[in-house]
Length: 301
Image (cartoon, rainbow, N blue to C red):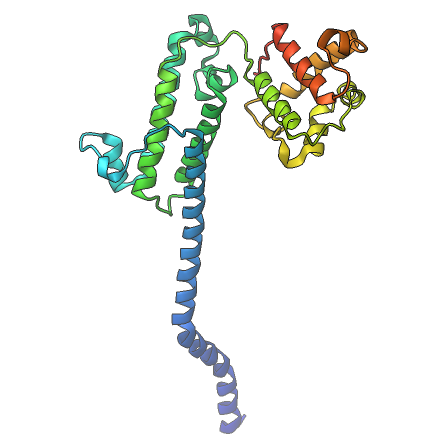
């Protein structure tokens, strides 16, 4: 190999790495700016989702007087924490809420239950037992989601003001829990919520075409809630009964109760409830009948 060939081979072997190095050097600043922009966009998405969920939570508690940075008390631990670590303040506020629920359940549950089922001494049991009003349940679920966001997104920061608003909402729930004196013997919340949804559909005057025969057919098939959700779409919200955890097993219970009424009372709709035209009116009457029979729903545990 002569010196010209050798030199040519050296140039060939060095040219591509050298070219790549030059390209990286030239693009270093633009790439750095792009990565910085992506981080900012990711942070902004998190910030917007946290803020949006917090706004939704505030809707569940319209009467709560939210505190602001201007009202911060120097002797309040969580308010101090909100200044230095808003995410930690959110997590601490949730922990205090859990401790309040555990303390209240220790107070009102029989000692035998506390010993045999310590897992019941949690916030979830207050929901499943029907001790919290529907809006309070929804607020609690929103606060839980926000707490999880704060705990699992440590690389992002939450604003001090958002942390203080979260604390105000958790304090509102804490006060509601503290005044509970006993757990309800029957959980009728689910049934009364069904009455509200059915009554709303009747009030729209858009579903008069649903006949008694159609409702009874869906009851017999065990699909009346699915039918209403498909038929009424945005006019009804049955997700808490068909998808949510708070009313798990409700659909099975509700169908069973309606089928009992169907089997014993079919053909007597007009004589017993004065109904002979609208299927939704019959469903409303039968839901009320379930309540009158004292068949409160107990959640699956």
